[in-house]
Image 1 (cartoon, rainbow, N blue to C red):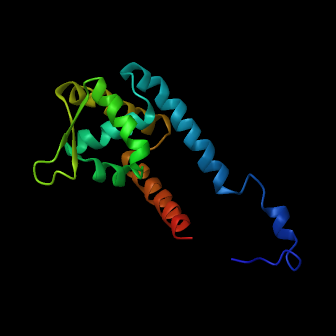
Image 2: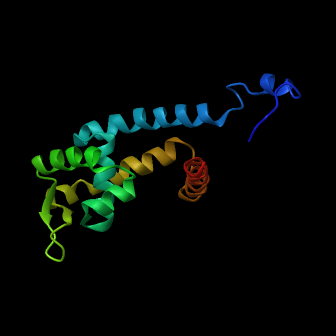
Image 3: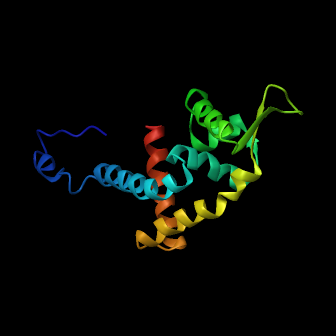
Length: 153
């Protein structure tokens, strides 16, 4: 989209922080991190580790490749997260019996035991934001459309 600001100088006056969704998204993301930090400290998890565990709670195990795709993380970012969780006894890593090129990641019993508190944190965020599961799903869908549109651009 090429805008000729010479022909439309009023647009520059209209493009303030108050109307730009980028700042709202940025500040909301920071608020989410602050909100979760308090709850995740009790689980001794960082937010990225929590995301890994959330996928593993849901799937009961997956491959490293699928985990990276789901979280949109490359292996150089994901590997240290998973290794740290493994070191704490929360996940296991093992070569796939079906395809040794793949690395299977699964939650341990101790890792699964954290699921309730993890889900409580997610529901607390929904409530604190004044959302319901339904309205939160609508917001998520809109944000994904924004993300995907930006990725395509």
